[in-house]
Image (tube, helix red, strand yellow):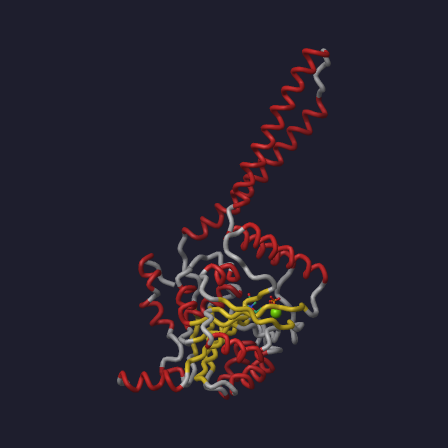
Length: 349
Ligand code: UDP
Ligand code: MG
């Protein structure tokens, strides 16, 4: 292709890549694809859809392959096992070539109908356009309050400003995608990473629907771990807390020591004895173990990072039939090329 014709092509319309992480979503994929297509058909752009099959154990992959037969825009990235949504999204981002890239859940909780509005904001110069929930339909009061608490806490203790009530549904500009692809940490708190890169960001408000079908893969334990991930990835406050608690306790102990000495000298009171001693020993022992646990959380994460393993492995890549003109990066090209940062670090993906 000559330089001139390449230029004309970019002018004619931009390339939009849609990334969909999929983990056991066989019930909704058909309906999701129907609604997504309806929206995409109305957009004046070349479109590529990358479904990332994150080790589904149901018929999701088969369903995707069937969809691909009728829709030449679809590429399927089949990961070697379940790596989690964070990594699945990253795999998709690594392979996305679009001038604008959209990440959307397959369970229809993220309405595809918002996409044109996102593109509009992107045209106005925003690098990250994220969908912000106005309400959370179909979720328990407990989940709503814990989520709200978590976001407020994150905003207080970390330097990056993570927007409240925001999921992963968003549009990223080319340079935002490039920036993200330089962040290869294993513990991927995506909401934090999206915020970390900075650039002009814009929120679009919407009402979040309940899942169309199937069930959420988030148990409360998973949510707790997710919160822990967010805090440890973006704040070292818990590490400092041990220092403050320790100082405070030592100071208290010193005052109490003074009090006992004076009490004995002035009033000749006998030593208070066994119960109070036991309480103090247990209290301090507990605090020490807790502080060790906090250090352990960080140490464990450092251990994981130092191993430098690839984030994911690809079992199969089924490019879109129209993808041969370079709508998506092939796994090989990424493996050999890598991003600038990866090359500097001397790591693969
Ligand atoms: N997902 C994934 N890997 C996982 C878990 C989830 O790719 O290990 C996908 C899932 O198929 C869906 C999206 O991530 O497209 C959001 O998952 P889910 O609906 O379970 O999360 P929630 O909406 O409750 O945050
Ligand atoms: Mg969901």
